[in-house]
View 1 (cartoon, one colour):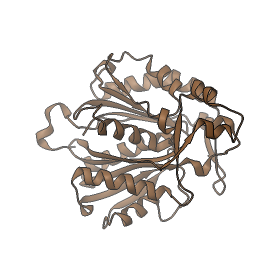
View 2 (cartoon, helix red, strand yellow):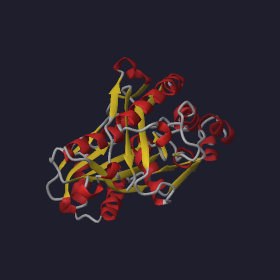
View 3 (cartoon, rainbow, N blue to C red):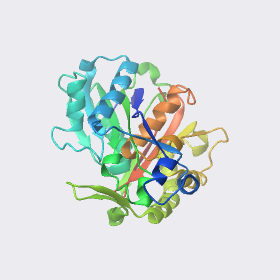
View 4 (cartoon, rainbow, N blue to C red):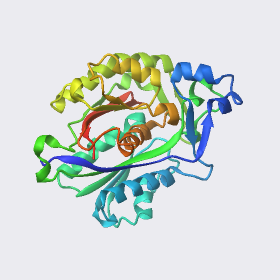
Length: 321
C-alpha cells in the first residue's frame, strides 16, 4: 500500500474564555488549587447555540483551505466526538453538507478522548487502500454540554473546541524517509477498566471519571505505549521533534513523558494550560497551534498519543505538514 500524510491542519476555539476565578464562583475552588492539580489557567466555552458541527466545520474549512483542495476532492469525512447531540444525520454528514463536499463517506467515531488518533488511523488506512483520495479527519467536542458544573473534580477540566487534518496519499516524490508520513498506529483498549472514564445516560449525559485511577493508569502505561508507537515508525523517542498527547492534565502529561528518553529540545504540547481538556479535539487542536506558530517545522516527526474512555488508546508518529 502507498503511504499517507497529513497535508494540512486547522483548528477552532470559541470566543468565550472561562478562567479559574470564574469557576470559583460556581464551586469551592480557587486559581491556585486548579493550577496546582491540573496546570489549567483558562479554557474556552462555546455559546449556547454553538454546536459540535459548527466547530467541526470551522476547523475543517481551515484545513481544507490550507491543503489547497476543493470540496469535491474529499472522499471521506470522519468526526471523532463523544459530545455531539445529534445521532443522525451524523456530525460528519453535517460538515460535508456545509462545506459542499458532494458525496463522501461520512461518519462519526466515538472513542472518547482517544477518538482523533483512532480516526486518523482509520482514515489513513482507507486512503492507503485507495478507498478515498483525500480525507478530512476532525476532532470536535462541546464538553460544556455534558459537564456537571457542580462537580469540582471535573468541571475545572473540560472545555470546547475542534481540530482537523487533511489526510492524503503520500506523493512518490516524498518517499525520502517518509517525510510528512503517518506512521503505523499502536492502538487498543482495556474494557475491564471501562468505568474509569465514562459518559452514561445518553439522553442527559454527564461526564464522570475516576481521576486518581486514570492518573495512575496513564503514568504507568503511556510510556510503553509511546515507545511501541515509535518502534512501529522505526524511530526512538529521542528522534522525535515533538510529542502531542491528549491534553488531559498537565501534571499527568509531564509525569508520563518524564519517563521517556526524549531529546532536550523536544517540543511538548501543553495546550491544556490555555484550552483545558477538549477530549477528542485536544490532540489536533494542540498540533495545529504548534504548526501554525512554527514551533514544529515541516517534516518534523511528532508522536501523537491519546487515551480515554473505554479504557482506549491510540498513538502514531506523524510528520508535520
